[in-house]
Length: 362
Image (cartoon, rainbow, N blue to C red; front, side, top):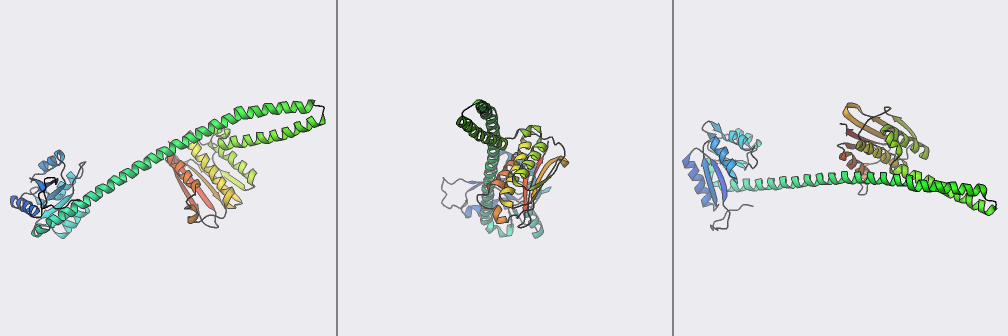
């Protein structure tokens, strides 16, 4: 905060003011008024628009005092030129002839404040207030920039984590298929051979029990592998979501209707986001919705991939979506943002839920 200082303390950093004024008497009066108020400042004066802009470009001033009417231009002309500079100081109009309408218009265009020369005694107060407001605005802008930088870094981290998770899922899925699945299949052949060739009843009984457990393990490994990354994704997004819907209907008994083109060509990262959105939405239906029917609609019209999963379940209120640990929908929204898309959730208690993801296509 800038404060007047009447002690002439050499440690006090003087304010750098630029006075746009064509009256030497008024320039002198402003300097005397500020000095009497104990405000230490260095004042540069000019009455030429070009010199005014050059001074702003060469030196960083804390504040500009400007008369409204000058020879061939006004203070608003100077403000319009100055506001485009990287470091534009706040403007205070100090004029002897400015109407209230013109003053209000100047404030609306970004001028910090105005003061009539007849009320020169209030100049220190107006100047300090303008500086405080300007410093507060700069602090707010800095905070917003830091917030935007943090949000950008968080988005980049989220995207990196999602990609890492998908890569790890694909790698684990391949290992389950190639190593565990292959090994279990080999053991199954050996147990089948023992079952066929064993003569002792107890050996055949143990072999058959082991075969049943082995079949269960093979089924579990297949389910885990498909949940991690179903190979059907390699056949395209429509085929993958169709497989997801059929498997969901078979497992839960909830009727699923799907409307989609026969094929939609999308980048792999978009494909994964859309598939995971459908997967999470169907998981939520099976856990919470108490629905009897689900409708999946997918299209790529007007340069956007749109996927909607809508159910006729019990729906949810706003307070349920705002629960601290409701990470599922938040995770879907973050996924969509990693590919430039957005998620919309619409739900009413007793009227079902609709989850829509929309992603711009290249």
